[in-house]
Amino acid sequence: MGNPAGVRRDFESLEQRRREAAELLRQGMHPAEVARRVGVHRQSVGRWAQQLKQGGLRALKKADRAGRRPRLSPEELRRIERGLKRGPQLLGYETALWTSARVAHRIEQECGVQYHPGHVWRILRRLGWSCQRPTGRALERDEKKIRIWKQKRWPEIKKKPAKKAARSSSSMKAERTPHLGSEGTNAGVAVSL
Image 1 (cartoon, rainbow, N blue to C red):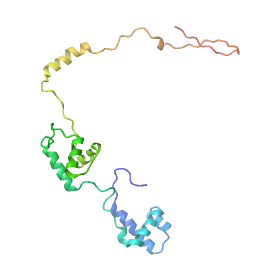
Image 2 (cartoon, rainbow, N blue to C red; image 1 turned 90 degrees about the vertical axis):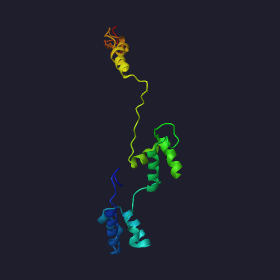
Image 3 (tube, rainbow, N blue to C red; image 1 turned 180 degrees about the vertical axis):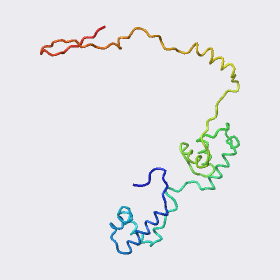
Image 4 (cartoon, helix red, strand yellow; image 1 turned 30 degrees about the vertical axis):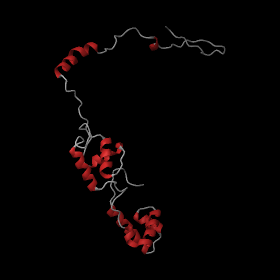
């Protein structure tokens, strides 16, 4: 069961369903019947009955979120973003390019939380940052010479498909010719060249 990927849970309706099940259990209804009425597995009703017995209705309150708690607080995320906005050169890097390894190193320095560089993109996406590749162009680049080279020289040296020649032997078909073997069946194959 569970939720399809990307679908958020409605914690309010889930809590309402647990409360409805709790009320039916208090009326003395069998857990299997409660499960049928509220549309859940009977093991869930058994778990809710245990929670109800141990902590009352408070134990059936809604969860505030699904999944693991984030390792970085909102304040830490703001500090990281401020550092990223200052740029990598002000923080001691040689180039003005934030790489995922640099961001991971920055997070560890700033917050003491270690992230693999391959997972840093999730944090950057949460901050509203996107992956961008700089265009690496040489300062000495001469657009006019490049255009002339593409129009004149490149067509001269570019490989062209070979003209159609005679068929190769691999393109010839094998022809079957009748050949009587020892038992009178077609056992041989002749190839024409």
